[in-house]
Image 1 (cartoon, one colour):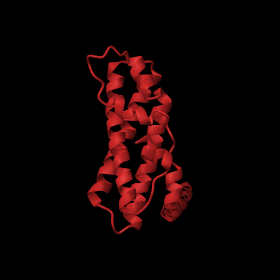
Image 2 (cartoon, one colour):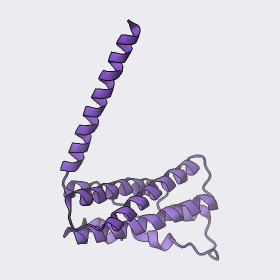
Image 3 (cartoon, rainbow, N blue to C red):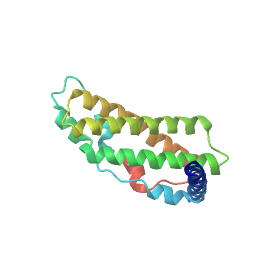
Image 4 (cartoon, rainbow, N blue to C red):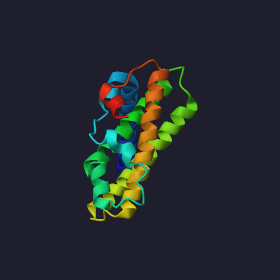
Amino acid sequence: MFIILFETGFIIFGATYLICSGVVVRRRRQRAWETLEANLQPNQGDADLSRYLNWDKDLLVSPEEKWQGVNGAQGLRAMFENAGAMLEMANYAAINSTETDSELITALRRDAIQVRVLVVLALSKSACGQVNESTCGIVSRATEYYIDMAKRTAELAQLNGRVLAPGFAASM
């Protein structure tokens, strides 16, 4: 008797999960480009990211100063969120546009995953109080991927005849 109830509950749970995930996918496909673009978070440090991309080893800059150069944890969180938003924009373009370059979409997806992994790693190190040269190296790599991804997103928007938000475009 218990096994029958367990199996029935498992089947109901599985069916509910599949239905809910189908609804989520359908909603994502119905979103407009403007809605996806609105998810991009402005970051005051975006304009300075390229300056911190290749930190010169001869400069006498402490890890804390490098950390503050990308707005610390707040800047990294914005990079994390923007990577997700740009990934959704790439998926939208792949589904809804005939003029997308598959290599561009693939590169965007790869960069978004790299940024998100590196940002989580850097944030976990900073949460443990380990803002050192290793953390700054991780932030530097995340920043490099983020800048490449932002350029590719702008290229994707131009290919599809769209204009990115002025704040985002200005930060690149």
